[in-house]
Length: 178
Image 1 (tube, rainbow, N blue to C red):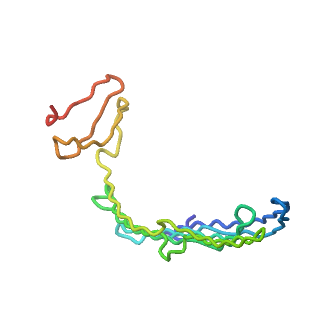
Image 2: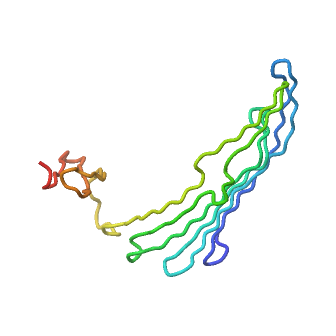
Image 3: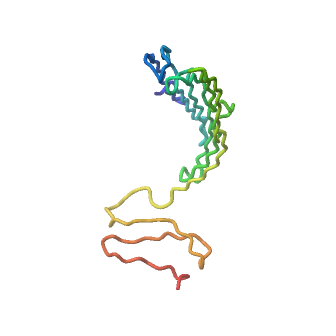
């Protein structure tokens, strides 16, 4: 949603209420808990081909599996990009879970057993991406359907595009291949 000419934003908030009432084995289970969370994404056009984005999510404490009480968790991500080569290429740098808050913790105190659990995964990453849109940006007339994939033949040493026309069934072979 546009906020200003240079700023777009999106916010999604949610809430619900969970109720557990029953028996597991010989143990009674009765839990009521409100659940809440949200996602926020903000994009900024900085100028001269630069842009940035900040996003994050949050989930409040909750219940998992009827007996596990989970702690709140969330994550914040950030990215920057620069348009290059007359807007035909893009260089992106992004970071995920900047504050390392995307890991989970939970406790279970049910049926005379007390368990504490925690887990993590590779939530913190840094990525760099370069994409290049080559070729014509306009289509003059429909072309025959072609399947393309990038391949790196050992004999050539450089990537080349492997194309096979569905209409003719022919596959061009590069000159460096036997």
